[in-house]
Image (cartoon, rainbow, N blue to C red):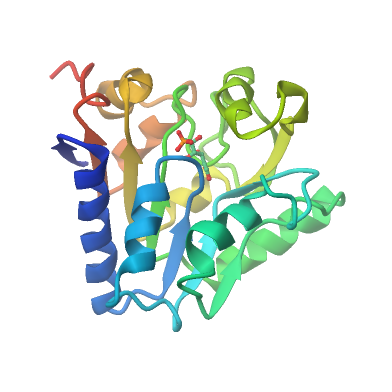
Length: 236
Ligand code: F6R
């Protein structure tokens, strides 16, 4: 793992932008993308950047809330359009379909898409409980796409985006751990003191499904971009 600590999230996001530009210049074509607060600054930088062009690239997102239609303002489809796709369209963009109630069919469709589009560069955020994608603590390292129950701490963390806690979906479709680990390169960003425990576990903790991000210790091309607050509990 390559760990880079920046004074601010803005500096870390600038570094992530440079790594995406490098990947594009080296011919990477499939980008795994994340949602949430963490990549917002990166997506804003990409949106403004004249020399970023995704029109020949494919994006494939980590997850989507179950039960939310694409047009729902808090769906990850809507998030991606607002923060990136409207400004920087990809040749093709895939997210799980949260409105598909047939979980078996949806999971199969997404795993086939992942097979057809092996990910060159995967962007990840980090849950304060150590989740990656919506692979909550206890998720098997062998997991592929599936319908998952969101941890209570995730529902609490994400209620800020909804009118009330009751409105937060309790389930989501998520890419599995195996699919994340299959990416050629991974960039994980984490900002703020709320992530400090998970950051330290991810880097220094024992590899265990109890803290899903610890599996990244086994990947041979991971760059961790964190701010000083997220680095504040690093114990060596
Ligand atoms: C989002 C995702 C999640 C988030 C994580 C951090 O697509 O997969 O793992 O990256 O919950 O969320 P934020 O960035 O809002 O703190």
